Image (cartoon, helix red, strand yellow):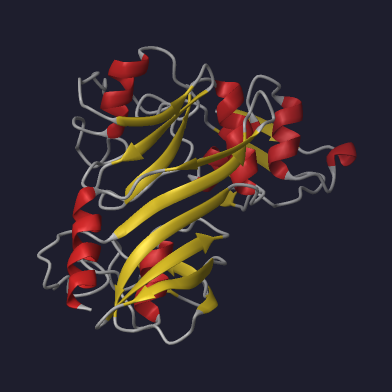
Length: 303
C-alpha cells in the first residue's frame, strides 16, 4: 500500500497530477484508472479524478494488480483497414466481443490481435485489454483503433478525452424520425432497475449525440450519428429514449424486426483523429457489413 500526506506546496493540485509528480514511474492514465476503480482513496474516501488536494490529505493506493488469467492468441480472421508501427485499425464484425471478461477468455478481438500482432500491443490496458483504447459493444460493428505501443495509447486516449476524435455511426431505427437533424443531450448513468443496462438519468454523466437523417423508409429511418461523448451504450440509449430504438437491439427494445436480425443495426462507419506519431490527420472508414446492406436493399425494394 502506498501512502502520501499532502504538503502545503501541493495544495489545489489535481490528484492525478500530484501522484504523477510524486511517483514518476506511474502514468497519469494508470492513476486515473485507480481512482475510477476505487483503488485510490483520500482520507479513506473515494474521489473523482478532478479532485483538488488540500494540505494534510492522506492519499492511499495499492498498485498491486489482481492476478489475471493468461489470454491466448487465436487465429481469428479480422478485417484490417490500416496498420503501421503505432496503430492498427479494425472493422469489427457484429457479434465479436472486444476483450475478455466476465468469464470469457476466447474468441475476442484481443485474442485475434495477439495472434496477428504478437507482442506489438500497448501494455497499458493490462493482459486483458492490450492495446484497447476505446470499445464497441459486442453487437455493434465497425471501426476501432488499437494502439501498438504505450506512447500511441496515451496520445489517443488524450485525444478521446479532449473530444478531438470524431466518431460517426450509421444506424437503422424503428419509426420515422421527424427531424432532419437534431442533437440529443441527455445524461446517462447505470440503470437502477437493471445493472446490466444504462439509462437516461439526471444523476448521470453528460452524453451528447448528434444525428441527421440519411433516408426514410416505410416505418424505418436511416441515421448518421456523431457522438461528442463515449458513454456506455450511448447511441442505443439515446435513440430508444426518443422513441426510435435501433433495429435488432435486444436490450433497449423488444428486439423484434421483420428482418430476423439479432443484435443492433448500428455500425461505426468513420473515425477522424491525429496520428499519434506523424501528427497527420487520419480519416478512415469501415464498410457496412453485408447483413446491413441486405436490409437496406430490401427496404429500397419496398419503396
